[in-house]
Image (tube, rainbow, N blue to C red; front, side):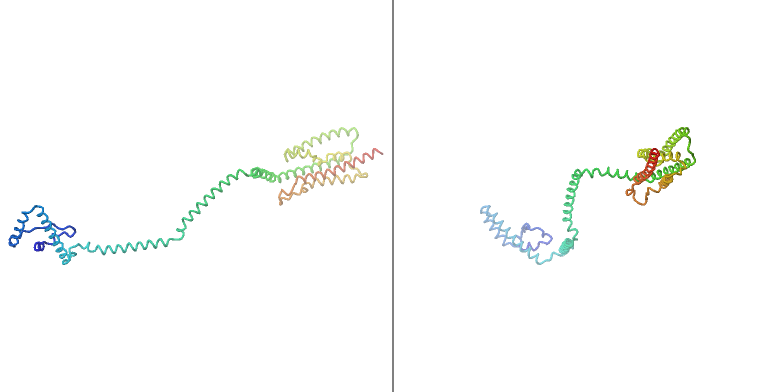
Amino acid sequence: ILQSVSKVQPSFKDLDSLEDDPVIVVDDSDENGEDVNTTTEDTSVLKSSSPRSSQIQELTIQRAVGKVLKNEFSNIQSAHDFSSSLPTELKDLPSKLNELTGKVKGLKKQVHELEIKLPGDLKEIPTKLDDFTKNVTSLTSQVAELKTLQWDLSTEFLSLPAQVASVQAKLKTLDALPSLLLNVTQALNKFSQVLDSASLKAGDQSVPSAGQADTMQEAKAEAARREEEMRKEELIDLLGPEVVNKYYNDKLHDLHLGEWRKVMKACSNKKGKGWMSIYKQIHERMDYLRTTEAEPGIDLDRPLSEQDPFDRLNNLANKKRKHADGIHDFFRANKRLKLSV
């Protein structure tokens, strides 16, 4: 058996398999004749026995041969270096595995360092996101509260747009006031011109007779009425119907001194006692009319809300009416005095 195993070449041995190779039986009857005889004798004896014992004997021989082959294989493996027969790729495999393991460890270390060196802003993102969600929730609730409060506003706030519109309308009226005052000034200038012409006519006329007086009085009254109508139309063109109606309803037309004209015509060039004072008052009245344009005293450099030019005009009219009433009272007193005499 040992001789047969020693003749086995290494190429017939499978290094990868762990199972035993099959037993090769070599017939060496020519070399060892004596052993063959003894074997034949023994086998003959065994053959005479039962076939079961022959099978056990064969198994025992095979087991012994396997043990011998294992020992021989281990001796051959230890005596010979099979690494030379391996390819270079398989030889470099352990070193490459070690290198790869080192690189993997280095990568793990770098990843760990990157996780540690994250900026603080990225780490605070979850907390900031929570805060943002809370703020959005609170703002939503506040908007809902504002929508409910909108229905609870007082009537003063709801009426505020109408008040603003009325204030704007008043401002427009105040802006138009300077042009209105200009029209009033022009009308007053015309009044003064009419009074000047009336005073000149009254100074030239003499005292008529009793028969002519009635006819002249009627003609003069008709002329005065027509002149009054024409003057009213001129005022309507200048100031508008509303201002003219207010002018006549408040009896501001006394500024024309219609009664004074009658006095001037009936009592012209009188030099008796008291006539000097009467003429003086008439001239003062005419001077008032000439200065009417400046008497309202409108200051355009100040806000119009601090001034009331219409009130000043009314006060001026009242002042002039007092002068006219004083003259009437004077004439009535003189008339009563003459009647008593």
